[in-house]
Length: 186
Figure 1 (spheres, helix red, strand yellow):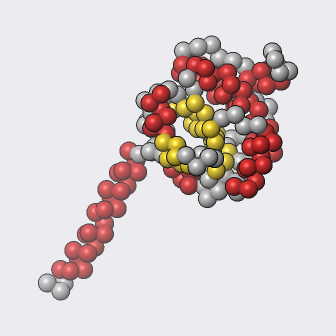
Figure 2 (spheres, rainbow, N blue to C red):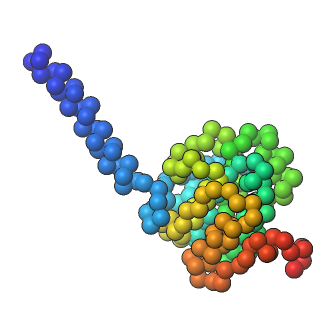
Figure 3 (cartoon, one colour):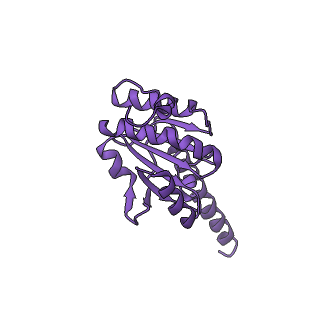
């Protein structure tokens, strides 16, 4: 029995690892798969549940920061939110910045959409990305429609995201780069 014990322990240790490996493959965050189970507190302290948001319509989750590139892109993503929110799109920005910096940043930028702060970067682990920014478009019901990573202060990534949103909700795409450069009131 004493010789069997190490063997039993070894088998017990190996079996859960192989099951976890299979789970990791089925839970991979990628286009065509269900979005991960995800909750985060927004800037007001309210719990935001991604599955509840996707019950209502498409959701754009943007993992970002306040660096100069992301800062320049923010205007495009605010326009995306403004243009498509009347058609059901919900935007969720998640900033990887300290709380005190974000309070001032949100006020200075007049953020008009749902946002949360994740200084520890747990959201990046949940969405299985190291890229910043990373944009996940999730259709109503929770399936990932598109993933766009990287920073492009010229608006090209934002325009591609806009096209994917338009396709998802069945409308014509808006050139958000052009829209962001227009004067207010147009």
